[in-house]
Length: 314
Image 1 (cartoon, rainbow, N blue to C red):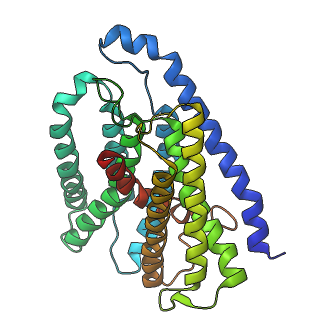
Image 2: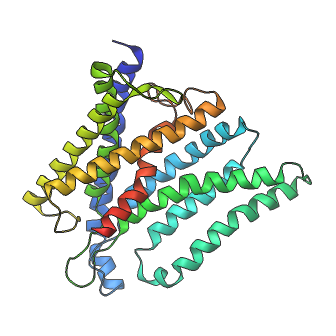
Image 3: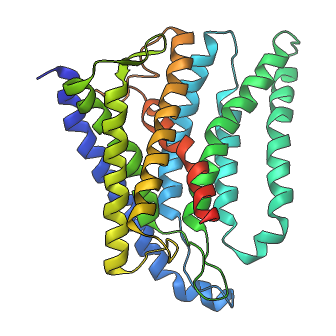
């Protein structure tokens, strides 16, 4: 067995187990805090959601920011990692706070303030060094790193803390099951594409960007994601909708899986483009067999805004 495949089979289940554990804590904390939320905010039916997801993003985003800065450095774009990490973290915390009624009236203003604050802090940081050289690229790199990681992370958190329509149960509401479904769709696309490409791959997908990917592997990956969507639809039908809209059917699950899986692959190719530019194979070496943190989260982060839009449209 190849060393890379052996590492994937070893560390993949460990990371999945840690993810499931934190999402379990997330779901249970929401249940425990339900009475507190109802007592303090009349009209709110659920508890505090997203605590576990907040911990996950709080752990991975600073690491991913550092790795992204390393990729940017290949083009002499050096973001300030601390400011970028604070900016991306502030965006995720903003999404987390949108579930609390007192925060909703000022949510738009706070979001605008965070977006503007990041380049201002980068400019002040450069001025602190009493240097004008590379001021623009430092500011631009810091903003791009914050929005790429924190902006996409905002949507993932927004999905988790989304509350159902106050009137009835129309629309979707955020649950850990929805987050798990999105993550499994993205990662099972990778798994299906990997093994499908090894077994059936004949035609290169984008040879100049990612020589290992094939059209056959992509088809297998999307079929795997469609299967995940169909299984979650069947589970929702048998055990309650766990947050997804009531008109969710098996074919909607299949469609959702194909779209999310395809967007996840686009996210992987987007990072491949940056790694090619930086002339590196992986964004880091933190996780054997997977590379860096950025190599792991690039796909689900890009899939998050598309998932949010699809749920909103449905």
